[in-house]
Image 1: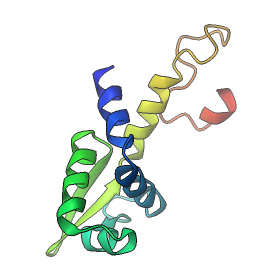
Image 2 (image 1 turned 90 degrees about the vertical axis):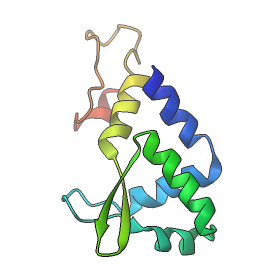
Image 3 (image 1 turned 60 degrees about the horizontal axis):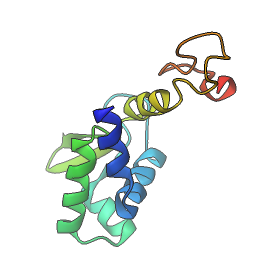
Length: 116
């Protein structure tokens, strides 16, 4: 529950939600690909670097984004497995037991939306 509250708190702020959505759009399933440099995010969203840094730190602390270094740049990427875990937690009892299983919405389930 603590992890879910931290993630939801991080996303409950307009700038952070906008940053996370931008990173989802820039996502690549391949390791070492996709994501956006901090400067790209700041420019695209019109956020001052110091403000952006604060918001990126909050999203990282919440486990919603990860970073990697490419040369002198930090590239930020949405952690979709964390978001799927949060969604699964929220939907864990989505049909109040009528689905016939305890956890019909397991992270990584390709039919997540069909079942819930």
